[in-house]
Length: 200
Image (cartoon, rainbow, N blue to C red; front, side):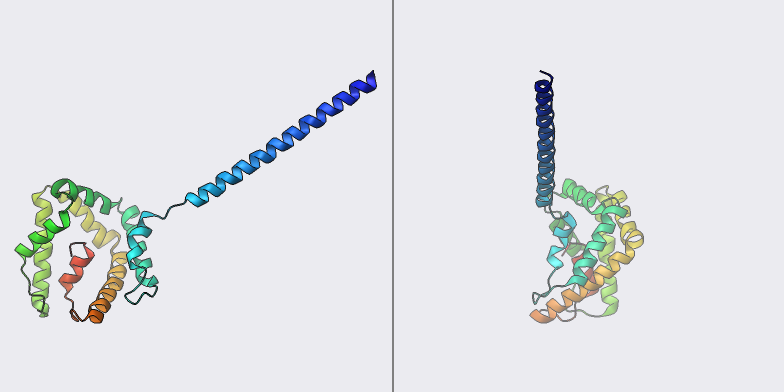
């Protein structure tokens, strides 16, 4: 009788250990599957999507300088300037609607009429000052002065270095495009600023 009991208890122990081993292996498999699924679902960062347009130049070659400088600039603006670009877009949409860029650009054109062929440095500087003043007044008239100041601080102090590197690379690329299409070989500083601010 004792031998039968010992045999039975041994078989019970074996079945328990095999169950725990099986359950452990199942758990490992499910956790592995979860990890694999999370890797598959990984989506590109919004900044990567924004800067994607700068990844290749006009001839289709990789333009890592411009692409990486765009990402560095955008990361700076997002994390060091408390996501100022998103806040400004939201504020513009609230006050002007979805066509905010067109509305702002039309106001700039009315206030600062320009001759595109003009390449006199004095006129270019005067034009640039007019554009900056008009943009400032647009924000002021729509009670967006506070957010304008924060954006200006981000541009000229917090992310000034990152912005300058990106603008230099962007301007080179724009010049290359203009030269290649033979639209205009001497792009003005004002055009350059408007392109960067998203108003062109």
